[in-house]
Length: 472
Image (cartoon, rainbow, N blue to C red; front, side, top):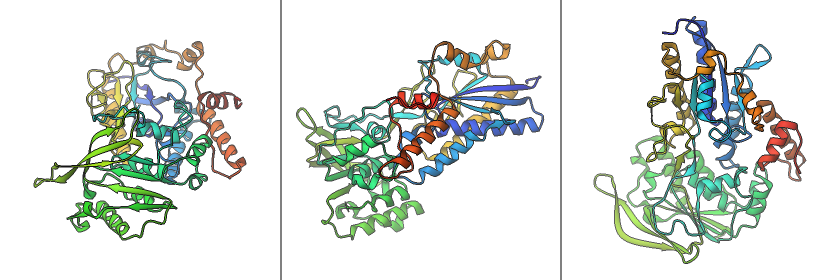
């Protein structure tokens, strides 16, 4: 057991919800331990983020027309903004525009902190193994989402010259992609969508968006709110096909959430269609076989599926082909590897047991890089709690290994000194507040008043964050 009180120094890699929840829970838990006179008397947390701004996929991975996301952002903001000791020093310090493995090595963090928590999430598309997946016109949903959310490291333009497109997937990301593709640009003006994205969507040629799922309506992975939003898009007809609903009864659904969604789908089946300028088609029982085309996408082929006697999915041998000029793959995400950390290539996660990285004392994981890209915000909180609980237990038991060797000897110094020495243009929490205020001011002065207009280029974000000066 640790015999002398310890001020725990922890680095968290990733400032999305998983990292912020872990930091907030850690600060709260250490405060409780301190009040009971345990072996840990305090904590100092540095939250590293490769982007100049915080919030991860909440800022760069969710469609801008989700108003409820603002509530999550406000909650995350409060967690970081309130972490102040005395009136001057934050328990949690945000250090943005710093990529671990590029600007600082993981081993350098482990020397300077008693523990390191990996919370890098999953931002890459999972693979779809069908012929033609690499044809021009075949896109990963994650890339498209990054574009319409104004991610600083993607191209400013997106090809929207297809009139008919396919979206493969039956989760919320597939719905986000389909809704943004089908929605008329003027209905996104009031959101924080970047101006370059709005201009691209205004020129879009899309008239028909087809969403395909391998399972039936009772196997959807949506949530009721996202599904309901789909039916409220102005100027867009939702088209369903009766053959997909044979034998499907909402009363048989195993939970209330699915019952609500099946009733919603059934209510749409009775709606008149044919008057809207755009259509959003929902197809079920379709397993992708091949993306077709010579030189670029010109169609997609599926095999019809059905539920077998044991409930398992079966192929029927019936093939369906659709003429489309673009395909968006929304079949899941794949974990973001941290250079220097163990990584399970098959599952896209850091191998861990309860958040403890296997074979690496003092190294932890939380969020999607820990459990895979599944679950909602509530899962992220409970996930972080498990990791933080185990970290504190390890610190109290004195089993953090050699992590924090320089910190323990008092020779580490502030990591910001090292970044300054390397001339790394890191951003801070105060810098984020400046960028946040700047984006809100851009929204107020916009020809169409908006809550904010996102600054997209990385150098402009850094300039505003560090100097309050917009680069032109």
